[in-house]
Image 1 (cartoon, rainbow, N blue to C red):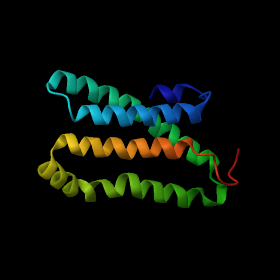
Image 2: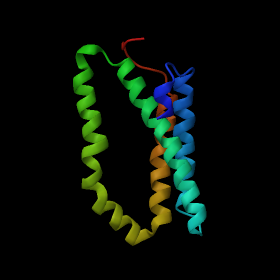
Image 3: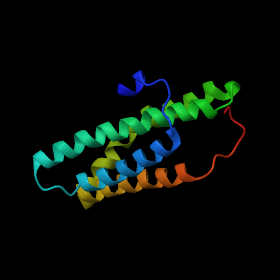
Amino acid sequence: MALTLIPRVPGAHGTLVVSLALTAALATVLGRLPDAGAAVACAATLGAVSGVGMVLGNALLHNETEPRYLGRVTSVTSLCTLGLGPLLFPLVGLIAAAWGTGTLFAACGGVCGAAAVIALSPARGGGRR
């Protein structure tokens, strides 16, 4: 919500990379915390940090997408972020039951870490700048 008050985020790409890296670390740590108080504090921080990454990631995606493809890109992004979640819940339950929540959160951290590495790569394409 705070990001809506800022007209422009200086160094948005770098902020996105840092947000993704922190999200990866916090997700990994969350699965290993022994007490509920620490887990709640970590989860609250994780929500704030990952929210920054989501907002900046979507803003940068829309900024770099050619206008004629914006509807398609937004549709695919929405499908992946909102549509696949409920379909993957049973898989999340199976992973947590088989290997534990620590492993599940470490895998989530790994995915977020991979996203941070991908975000470090140079832009490829002729989007709007």
